[in-house]
Image (cartoon, rainbow, N blue to C red; front, side):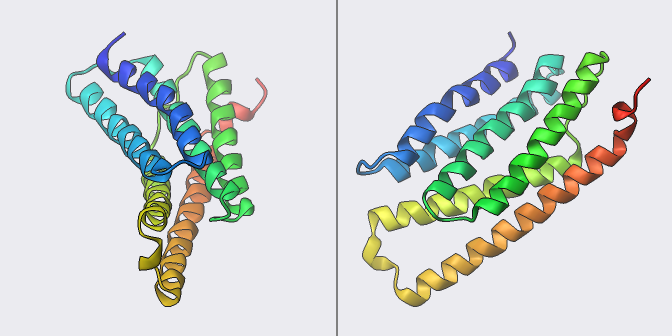
Length: 190
């Protein structure tokens, strides 16, 4: 197994401690979750960069890299809903798109095809990660310096978070519709 694929598997392994740190109440847990998520994001960038630069792109990587990205971001979004930071409907829209595209990729795989991630999907992933990191930073600040957030500051930060989430949901839906439309022929019966 090459280095990019190992980094993808490392990101998969990071999901459990990330969710545990975000879901349990211990001092520094939110900050620890932020660092785990940032490490996962770094491995996502690194595995793609290394695979392309050194011609180490594999079918495993084409399939598993976006799948593990989805698992990490979906886990984060679900935890953020559980913490009351974002609405469930937004996460349902995001998760539905991810399942739909994953299903389409499975149909393609059954036909011997691998559908790699596309540019719009990569932009969607970046926005999802930015949104998650924003909320994790907000949680970390609240955990480490709760008195630093006054009422007006908190309202401003919540509005900014809502704007990030709106862009993320819009890009997620747009990229899903675009991907589905581009590969619609895979859903027709032969």
